[in-house]
Length: 613
Image 1 (cartoon, helix red, strand yellow):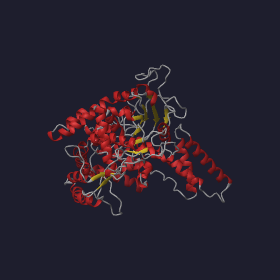
Image 2 (spheres, helix red, strand yellow):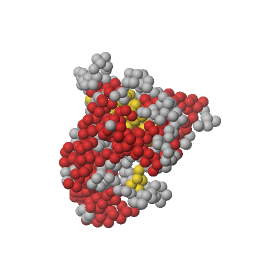
Image 3 (cartoon, helix red, strand yellow):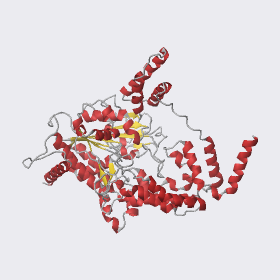
Image 4 (tube, one colour):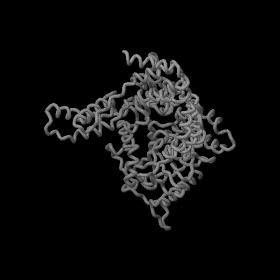
């Protein structure tokens, strides 16, 4: 009875959503949503719902009355992750920064920095019930991708470029569940459940496929906990680097384990290890930080971080779901112990239980006949925001234990011991070898070892640029030929991460070159480069360095024809490295004004050496 009642409620909510967005028109006599697919629900393809990751949905700023705000160029202003108003920031920071520079003290700069962070991120702060303010709206698509306007399709395929690859899956069977990454988790899971019912009604099919990506994995985890009856609605689940047990980045942030809050690391290593800057830039910033005393710099950092974490991130229940289960209890005590946050704590406790039950719930789905697959990326060190960044294997954003559902890994850059024997925690077949060829992964410890595919060296944030992952996902969506990691030699359990988006673009540009007047050698090089690119793009097994070398070859051809600039040579960081290391050795984390004698002597020696050899 309870199950039937919830189905009825879901159908009513679907009708309400569709009517409110003008997707369909239903007369008083009609009692069901009309089927919108040509197949009338009788084709072999199940409708597929993509549940995207962090920030992969359009969220817009409004004036509070529903009117979208635009910038000077007439473009809508996004709310994720920040609403940056340059003029306002300059007014906020300029005077405190100038006074602090002249006085070499914190003349209100840390307070101004905290207010500047709030100016940029405050609109993402939820109230005591976990609800966002009304001036932030999410662009949602209550129709298939085939019926989505062109700009909507560009948004969807910009994040998940399935349109670049051949598939039998009809476009009117493809849906995109957009949501605000800072939203209310319980409400978003309710929306996802109702979205599934809507898709079933629109397509006429009795089941759907779900493709949760990254943070979308947390919505999936909540879905199967709060709506166990959803098993009847699911045909296949394809988890793509899912944050099923959160990310230690959030765990470190919420437990105040931030690596850059250690001044010794901030001034000597943090920026180089961040993975986002070249060493020249990183060393230059290290030196530039010394324009103010380290006490001032650290005060500014503390104030900015405290505002972002305490006033914004920890008010969002959909941020809390990214906190690993092992980190949640201590973080909860730190931020959710006051009476004002009792409701937030109640809601996050609900998901914490879902997190703890996730593996059992997934096994329950499988017992009910739902097919579950998982993609995991590994051996890319975690971005070093948190102090645990180098103590685990990761894909740059999420630790592999979370995305693989418990597989065992050597740390990044290391291998399993020579005498290591696979754990077989979840594999009882003695003929299965689940140890990766590079001896980094023991997949037998993962929850579904026979249905989990691994990609060595693939960065989490660049997943959509890996054509193999996209092809495998489309194969699983459209067909049932691949049942496990042994089904097809085209898709082995252990593969190589690669980025082929530029290979495809540059290859097409090279194909379009006018070869009139070229030498035979030049034409031969073009033909061979194109053939190499086509062979790589046709393959579904990666080779380390292959795509990068092919891309460089195509760039060289285009640069020679003046159609593309050759890659600029990286600036030599040697001098800046030596200077930064010397400064750290001689004056620690102190600013320039705190060690004038040492610096004067150093500059004198350098200038003397330059002038007199």
